[in-house]
Length: 302
Image (cartoon, rainbow, N blue to C red; front, side):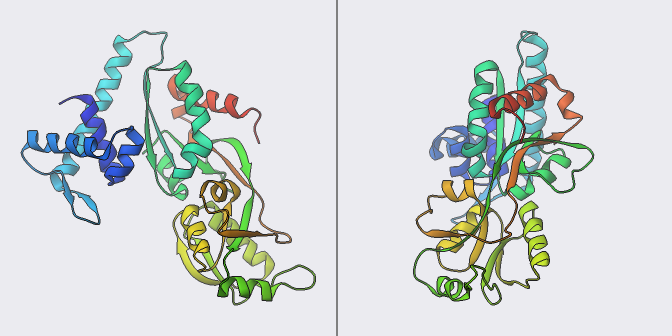
């Protein structure tokens, strides 16, 4: 069983989505599916349960996932041992939101691959609010995240850029937009009472918004709590409520014409976006090199 096939299976076992794994691996969905099917045929039993709505690991799939992780780790160790001592080789495990893959990581990866072509990038995507937790649990080497108000002692944070946190309302004529316009006072402030909010269900921006509500003396009417800023922008565009999202997410969403940003006096501070990693892991020359390239790519710290 070849190393490439193991990498494909690990990607699918992490995303539980053949299309997303295909995008991350630069493979067609059919090629990803064929690779997994060949592994299942070699083993003689299914590793994944598939239906029209979801993909799940079987008990055999969970066991094979551990085997694949162990085998890939040994392979990387052997490559480092037998390879050119002057050339970095191995694997960097990254975690970020889909938006961050091209809005934040793309220039870093381009520069890093140019100088260290032997290093493999293993990327996982999901809600950015999970990034710090995955780092502290040791599941990934580096994550793209907002800077937390309380930095865990074991973690290092490299600031890369700032993105304003924007209040956005539906651009289309709807009840929510009418409520916001009716609540605007002559002084330019907005009476937020009764206006439905779509808020993050967890993470740094949720903490920032909760703090803002308390400081402003607002008891918000929560319409929904959702995972990911991309989902918030989408729900606002459908006229379901008012939401907050980083400017970079709004611009990358393709929905800038469907949401309207509202200027709010004494609004939220900008979100500082950067990389986080365990301090102990940065002792690795491989990770330290990636960290340094990221810092050089974005210039001076925010």
